[in-house]
Length: 134
Image (tube, rainbow, N blue to C red; front, side, top):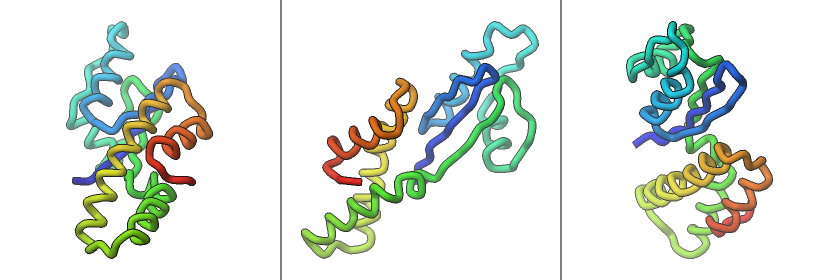
């Protein structure tokens, strides 16, 4: 399973983060429900924007997709180093641990960004909850 972080910038400048495309669609449609000219977006519209580089934007300025493994690389490197100091794990086990940890800190990141926390506050929260120091 490929984990991702999605960032959308609405026409009014509001920024929304999520890790689920369905939540992204609901956010776009909810933000524009009062606009009579707005046609609801669906999963095909989002896929076209994210993967086919379509330039058609309806109801928002920008949408970005980040690979979660790259987005959280600093945290994952520290986490894997800590694991390898304890025991010599197989590559499959390391990948499973990385995916689990990525899902965990992804939820913290998305919640923090949407509640208005800054980078330092999110970093402190991940460090405290994830037991890593970045």
